Image 1 (cartoon, rainbow, N blue to C red):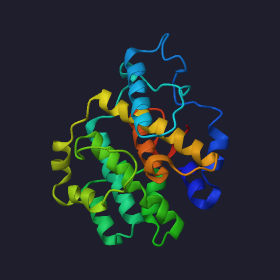
Image 2: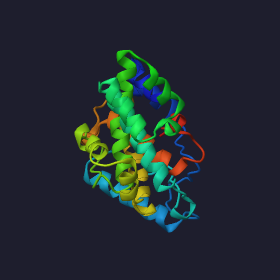
Image 3: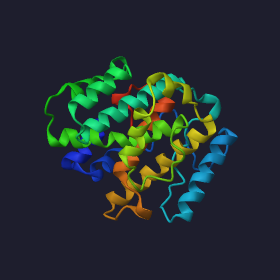
Image 4: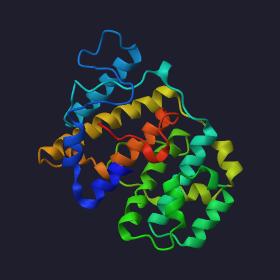
Length: 252
């Protein structure tokens, strides 16, 4: 959250590049320059798939980026935890996009969201008239919820962080069913499928930060606003037991 606020308050991606590009670190990741050695086979294969896709899309790559966690190392939250995080994130995004307070309060009540909200989310939802910048920052949360709903099978696919989703496509999930109904439908995707997206967004974000740092436009129609939200959601899925939602790292 701290990084995103800095970006959208005018400090820009160049600052983030200055802070993070030299570090090239992510969680417990291991160097990948050789893509061999002690790395697990799925880590190597996953990174190769990410690089191949980026090359096909003419997105710059960095073969020295550390690889992410292996499948054997990854422990996801429960389907209930992910579902409630997705709903909470979406409702916060809805308020950021101007949904009336009465509607927001009803969703919080109907889905029993209060225990699932982060401290920053509680503060934002309680604010009667948050300023425009705060609303804008939280409005982007709709994109993070998109990824979370995808991870439990309620959004069909992720085609890359380029085009914003229509919020109505997600709010319909809440309008058509109860909390119990939503939980009944939620099924976590395979670890391998989620880690593919974690690795790809990590590589995409490195490219976006690097291109901006060098004064070049975002490559291949990618949007860093969307990519940052996807990055947070995906990193939370693999680091939920280490980093609470408000503090999820977006380092590249």
